[in-house]
Amino acid sequence: MKYLKLTLFSLLGAIAFMVSCSSDAENTDETDDTDGTDDTSDAASTPLSAFDEFNPDAVTVSFDGDNITIESNGIPNHTSPYWEETNPLYIEPVVATRQTPGRIGGDRSYSLTVSSAPEIAASSTATGLGAIGIAVTGVPIFNDLEGDSRPIEEEIAQTFDYAGAHNGPSGYHYHIESSDIPENTTLSYDDEKLVGIMADGFLLYGRREADASYPTDLDESGGHFGVTPHSDGEVIYHYHIVNEFYFGSIIALFAGNLQGTPNTIM
Ligand SMILES: [Zn+2]
Ligand SMILES: [Zn+2]
Image (cartoon, rainbow, N blue to C red; front, side, top):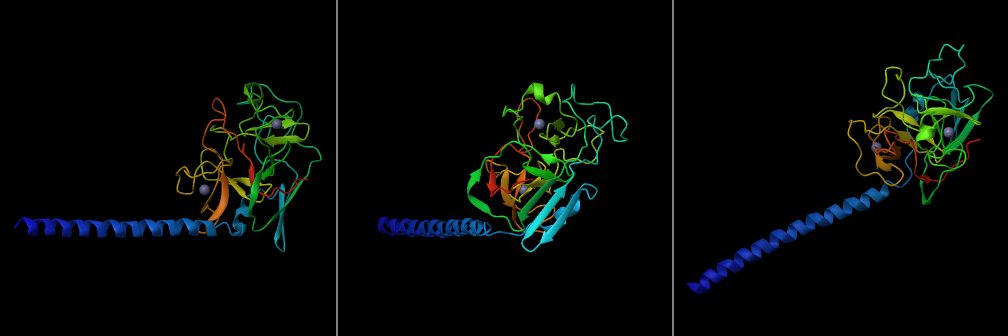
């Protein structure tokens, strides 16, 4: 009797072993899925519908073979205290407590030519001073540094309007996410809106995904592979405004390295 019991236990043990083997097999499948993710690094085309979001009064987008050129005069289509007071879009400062010198306007132009199917580069590239991207409004996107390469701090933050912009020697430009105030009707604030296109050709979106969730798998640049409101279900590499404070309640638009090969914004 004792021997038979033992055999029964051995049998149960053997079954348990087989079950654990089959779950190992499932794990192996998951590893295969991870390999599948690598396949998405093969360049996917930037969805053309994203360019419908750009302000046609300021931005011209042209397509030439495998290249897309975005040209802008840098003039926003929203209100700001940085307009001349005679401009209909001028408003009293609602966020800025002091202003940098200069007003929106002047003879500015920004031109960026990117691949229509940008790829992740072998190594990432630090951004420099000046325009590192062009926003949907036509206004250039700057990184988290000011002219003397100082990281944005409280004294500089006081000069940002609700759009997260101020004026500099090179004109009006965005550094940080816009503010949640009634005056702000167009810019991305804690949402899934398209912010603009970066110098490496990848799109920059607001803090959230199209389903309103916050992405949880962002790389050090705020980028990941996923679907976007424009990609029609296709998985593409894109950046998000990273959902964390740069300091105080300030959220930088883009403070990391570019993961693709940067093109010059002229
Ligand atoms: Zn600046
Ligand atoms: Zn995403």
